[in-house]
Every structure is written in C-alpha cells, then in structure tokens.
Length: 145
Image (cartoon, rainbow, N blue to C red; front, side, top):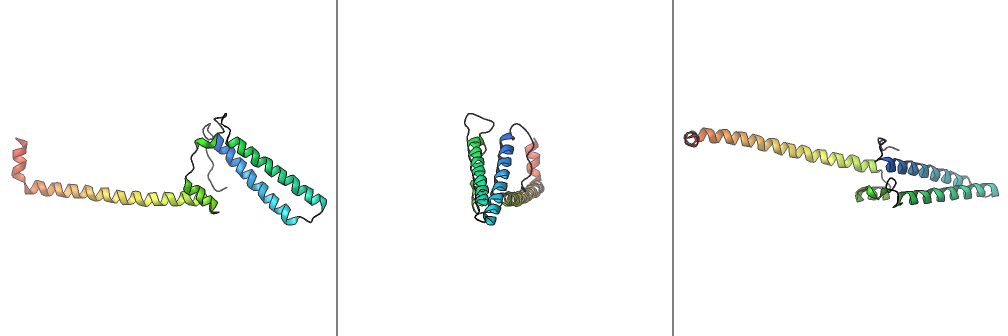
C-alpha cells in the first residue's frame, strides 16, 4: 500500500486491523484472478478455484462483521468518518492518496494567498498609520492631553 503506516496506538487499532484485512482481501482477489486465468477446467483446478472463492467469501464476511460490530468499540469503524470525495475517488478506480495530495496542495495555495493578504493589510496599516501621524501632528498633541 502507498498509504503511510499509522502509529500503533489504541485509537488506531481498528484502522490498522482494517488495513490489514483490506490488504489480505486484495491479495486474495489477485490470487483468485490468477486461478481463474489459469483454470484448465479439470476437477483439481475447479476445486482450487472453489476453495479460493470460499476463502474470499469468509474473508469478506469477517471484514464486514468486524467493521460493523456495535458491541466492540475498539473495532467499530463507524466512528471514523471518511469524506465522500475519497469514496468517490475509490469508486472511480483512483488512488485516495491522490485526493489527499491534491487536498493538501489546494490548502497550501489558499494559505499562501491568505498569508499574502494578511501581509498586505499589515503593510497598509503601517503605511496608513504613518501617513495619519504625519498629516495630523496637531491632533496627536490634543489627544495626548
């Protein structure tokens, strides 16, 4: 996987388990694809294919029950919210890491723009304050009294 490893903390335990389950599922799907591609129609190859399908079904079932177990707060993944944009990326066959990278780039550009505006207003404040002080010297004397 290209996603960085999560630090092993009790709060991240469900995510780490789910990531491992998904990695195992992906590996099983790849193995199933190889078995389907190499299937010669013999009873042995058909049996191997059926065994792999049954294994994959049990893995999917285990992943589903683990993710939705309401009694176990440590494995309940409903507490982790996933942005809809990330789900759309995955459904479109795209890498969610790309979404994260683009999100960070957009925020960095926005932050740079806002920083520029803040610096501009700071300079405006300083210049405007200096001009006011120079233009209204007599007011300064009145205000200090």
